[in-house]
Amino acid sequence: MNPLVLLFLLILSLINASLESVLWSYLDQESWANACQGKRQSPVDLPDICYQKQDLKVKLDSKLRLSLFFYDERLRGKLTNNGHTVVFIPRQQNIGIEFASSSVKNPTNYTFTQFHFHWNPDDTKGSEHSVDGVRKALELHLVHFNSKYKSFEEASKKQDGLLVIGVLFQECFKDKEPYKGITDSLSRISKVGTTTDVTGFTLRSLLPTNFDTFYSYEGSLTTPPCNETVTWILLAEYQRISYKELSEFQGLSVLDPDVGLRRQTQPLNGRTIYASNDDYCGIKKTRKRGLQDFNAA
Image (cartoon, rainbow, N blue to C red; front, top):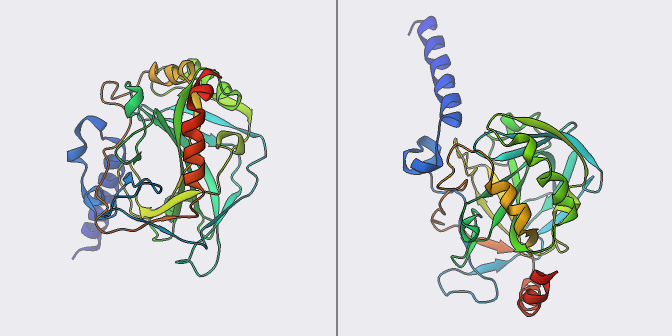
């Protein structure tokens, strides 16, 4: 084939891939093409580790470990409303975590590259992942790429390229100080395509108290192009966000305001979900006993 024709076809495929990752809608998820129709898609419905159904068991992996680096450093960066989410991109990228499991020969370092949120006009349908079919108000994704690669773009095409920490949120009455700095900034990016500077918070402050107990499974990005190159970490303990703070997200102008900014859950297709330990059961019982007091706080 003529080299010029080959070059034209290559450029055309790159343009199509680029457009596919931008021109999509939560309103018509069935039309998401190519990799979004794969067998290792995300999000998924997580089995409750304490009350497991027979067909959806969580396997304990004693070697699952998550070590946080630089998560206590104060960050500076840009917060942007891109119409699909609110995304924070730090001014500098550093190694953020080390991850180990039974399936990985050596612990792997990952570089933090951005975080973003998923929500819905309905408080009970905001998160992407669910637990026994129950969604939470909001979900935070902290996105990392394998530090052996030069960039997120390169890593996103590699089998071991990405790791995303997911945090589910439950509403409460009192504003949470770490998120107040972020939610106070949302008024400056109320319109799609707007950006503002944010500073003064740490990644650690965005996480719940316990981050040692978590689920893990192999999945994908939850938006096009849906690359199946993500190791997912879903923290078992919920973070808290006030009703007022949640309303700040829900009040933003976005591209699909009526359906919410989340993907439908995807079938497991035989994948195994692992848990780092079973301390989650104790957390869950404590959470249930203290729910009323916690909401009143």
